[in-house]
Length: 141
Image (cartoon, rainbow, N blue to C red):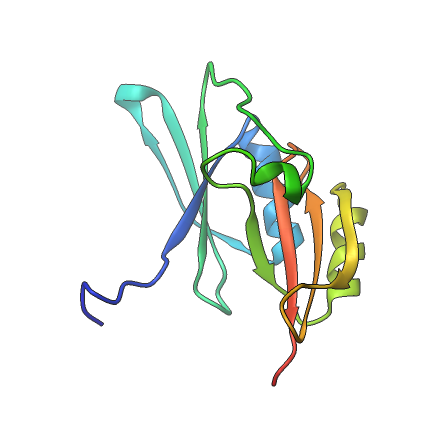
């Protein structure tokens, strides 16, 4: 790998309840805690979660005094503001993954359906804090 061809290492998600988010994401996606650290000068607590199977990381960040930012309640609304609108997870069984997340307290946003991308099915949920998550089932071509 060269600097011209980087790979995505992690996505950072600011959360209101670090312990609750850690618990939910580990149960929802089978992630495990890779590390915990505190950046004392700014009072920032970090929990880095990792997928042992796929290698991606989700960094959960908490700082006392934080407040909710703009959150869209649908994919269409998310693209009306600049910045990250959602995080997408590839899943092998879309219906099963969708039901699993709803059972863990996710809110339904878009039921499983065909994606505009040929050969792909998709769904959207909002995590317990309202962050949009896309689920994708990319069938082999």
